[in-house]
Structures are given as C-alpha cells and as structure tokens.
Length: 229
Image 1 (cartoon, rainbow, N blue to C red):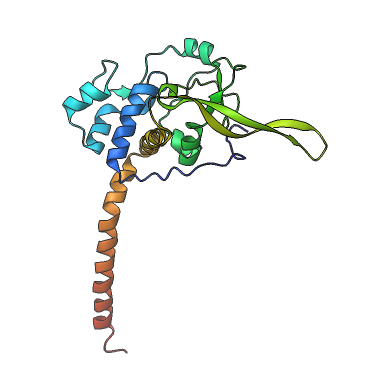
Image 2 (tube, rainbow, N blue to C red):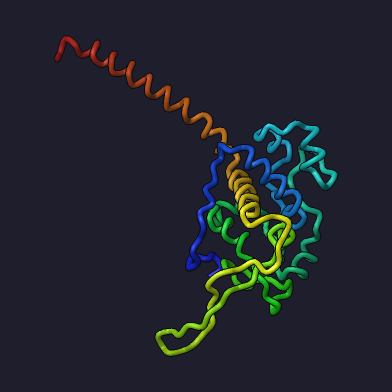
C-alpha cells in the first residue's frame, strides 16, 4: 500500500547529464531535507568533485552544520526524539531513489494536501497517512483534496480523492515548484548511484572504441582468411 503502486505516477524525466539541475537539487536537499534526513553514504567533497562545485562555494552554500568537506552528510537530530516526533526515525536518503524510483519520489513530493486529522495537518495521496510533515509547503503552498463519492461493486459508498487544488499559494508558481522538485529528485537519483555520471560520460568513448575495433577486427579477419575463402 505504501509503495503507491495503485497510484498513477508522474514521469520525473531525470537526466543525469544535466549537472546544473543536480546542483540545484543538492542545494534544495541541504536547505530542506538534511535537517532530518541524512545521506550517510555520501561525502560533501564527492558532490563538489562530481558537480564541479569549488571548495569555497561548497563550504559556504552546501555545508550548514559546521562539518568539513570530507565529512559524511549526517544530521544532528537525535533518533529517539525523531521517532517520538514523527512516529519513526526519518530514513537515510542515500539510496531512496533506488528503493522507491524517481517517478514515485517526484509524484510524492508534489502530492501533499491538507488533512486536519493528521498530526502535522497534512496527508499524501501517494503515501497515505505519511508521518512526514510537508517541509516544502512554503514553496508550494497548501493543496486541498478534491473528493467525490463512489459506490463499489458491493453497493458500499465511500469518498475518494480525484485530484488536488491549490488552496494557499506558496513562494513559487506550480510550474516553478514542479521544476524545483524535478531538480531535487535529480539529486536523489544521482545520490543513489553517483558513479553513474562517470559511466555515462565514459560510455560514449567505449562505444566509439568498440566501433573502431570492429572495423579493425574485420580487416584483420579478411587478411587472415584470404587464402581460405
């Protein structure tokens, strides 16, 4: 149920060759997510190296906890207190994109809506009764669920959510917020497999080498076998 398999997911369309988007997403991550969620498998200076961020900018813009560039991206929040506040300890997000998928994350982060019955006053159409507050509400604003009553095959009537509408504007327009979430998800996808950027950059040269080697191998084959054919 929590995986959201029955919920229609929107396409994130993440491209790891767009390093500018990943860098913008990294800034959103350290500003809004790293307060509660760690990324304990990643070091700050690795991000700087991969995304071309100078040490001075990395220290001033991306490190908020007084950590050193070589430190892991951990948080200072006490796990016991976090569990008390949220009902469970906020998970480490190092490989969340591999566990959930980029489309799930993109849809989830855009699907919070008002629900006064919940402890934080919000719920989520992708992850029902989620314990996480909507930390990006200032950017997106607050959404209201659009519902309608439906009758199932057994004649039972129930209310279902058919959509979300913006009830209170945020600092960003809906399009700007979607772009911000796209950038954040791009960073989370990179975070799950940072070496993939290098693999993608190297892949075109490997394919070019194989193409040239194929020509060479074919010419050698013709030379070796010319007396037989």
